[in-house]
Length: 366
Image 1 (cartoon, one colour):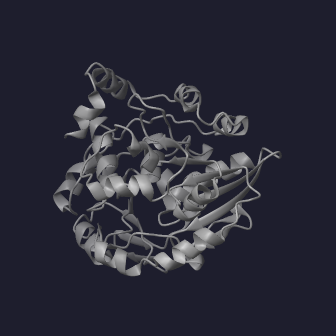
Image 2: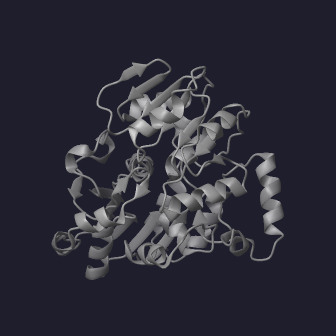
Image 3: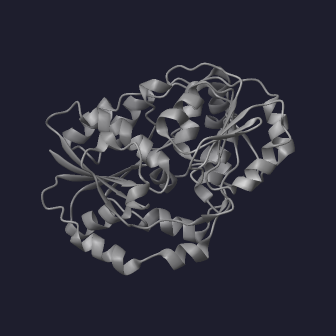
């Protein structure tokens, strides 16, 4: 079986999920997987060893400025003619299947060439009635047409009664130590604003990772670092809590490790706003709408969280992919949710929600 796996490269979360899948696929010699990444410049990818001789294209991406999506710059930097050339030139004739994580070039190429395609992404979960906040007609359009596939298999922290699967979290996130520092990852915020947020909290140490930092430096209690998978994960394992935007994968890793979480969603990004809503609803995070020092100070004083256990081995999913029973998403989702273990307080919250008719739709109106 030969698969092309298209992955959105704008954020590191999609790549993190693909790494788990790539390691699992490597245990199946009867499956050959090629990887295609779009959404950032080819020289900006890092720690990509698991993907072998991967391909890149420009694709489509969103431009962020000062913690918000800049729609004008996004439109200005889009190159639709180049995108369509990439779609037409991507030859899928040798592939049995296209897997897709919100990657538009491979999705549209599969649609154009009538190749079976499966979306395995957090974005696909929003095709269902799950908690949503700030969704506009444009957001609905993007979720439906940005990377269309023949089968949608969404990934979320809870299924809300739909054929949605839980996230896979690597084995390395099965245990951690609680240290003294706090990890900060706000890649879409301005560095000076992050400094202004944290500089007065001198009794705490903050390890701050940001894509605009090129060399590690220390300013009193503020330790600045460039993005690095190994160093970042070491800091995550040994931190006392995490301050981050509302990305799905990092939040999932924090939940698995039981790290308390303070989320500042990206303005204008309904997916991150909705992620914050879901975690708030399940009492698994605290949120702040702006970079607010009082909110941070209050959060620093709350106790540590309890871990959520998610699956770490995609074997069930890969066996389902190999079976070619791709329209039966219910069976694979049920099998995967049996491996999830929520803390008692979350189970009580979910039990209350399940007793409310159409509870997901009610949450959507929050």
